[in-house]
Image 1 (cartoon, helix red, strand yellow):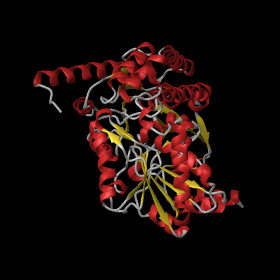
Image 2 (image 1 turned 180 degrees about the vertical axis):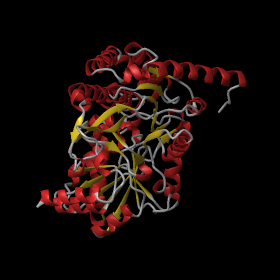
Image 3 (image 1 turned 180 degrees about the horizontal axis):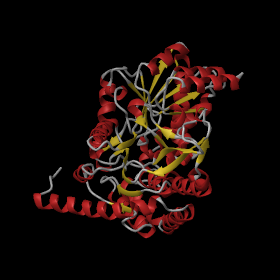
Length: 477
């Protein structure tokens, strides 16, 4: 990657400082804005998205080769749904919450106020370049913050339409878009943000957290990990194959909550693989490379990484159940299922983030749970079982950011469910009310009525405190 010249670096930092200073002047007026004012801002955003809907579809197609119908479903619709949910519930979320006071604090009232964090930085990833950039902005604006968004440099066409959409909805001193590569991200991270929201890999998340620590900026980290699909013996294998294939191969597997590997009883493996093959052929035809509905890897590096996973797994003894072909010129990797995969193969060590699915086997349910538990908690976990007891055993015995029973990925589409990871898969939640709270500070306020408590509880303690304790004891009797 080319390093910017000294002149370019100075210009970049000057532009970031200009935006920072402009937003600093608006930080308090925006934080003190009413429900009506915030709703008006969000409505302008919704109108701008709708106006440019076709352009968004086209931009994502240029960057990814993704079908416009898939973009509408996984990018635009999710943001518009979040906007509608936020508009309907914002007044309730902003309302001050009264809380009880203990007897010792008689004569006081207490409340929790939800107040804007202030100046917020959102660093977005490439894989859902519109959805994962704009949805955090919705939550941040709803909470009364000013925002700088940096879209991914890997999706330049989408970054350009994001700039257009947000510029029509917000002045730059409320929401600004700053485009560029990792050098731009590093320059942005030098500023003392009140909150940083990052979506991306665990490795980069660690660097974001380290940069935030220099200014004690709070962070939300939406990361990833190896999300397992555990198929129990009571599962409906046909339905499991449908939903696992859908969750895995949409966006060519470049989804942070995609099933990363499958655990299935050894005697059921071949039947499940047969269902997966049938479903994939139904989705993309006999030649997925020719399907208009199957997108490509984001860049050559991602393509080579995926091809390397397949090649090294096969070299280590794995078998390609179906798929396995690729084309470097178009960055195409076929929907691929691997069996007999060694657990120490690279494809089982790293988050795959592509259309390759290892199917592993187990003998007992306890063995499957132990396998998941021995690895870092993933962003998502999927369990397939008609028996509620079996499903609960998997959920109770494991940890993950979120989970689905008899489905995959759709938990992120419910704005009433908090979305986020745990441990290496993330820090903090968003979506819906959780998103509003992510970008808010819960401020504790106690109000004193009448004589202050200090009159009774301050020194000298002898005598006064004893008399107060005796009176309380008599009252409680």
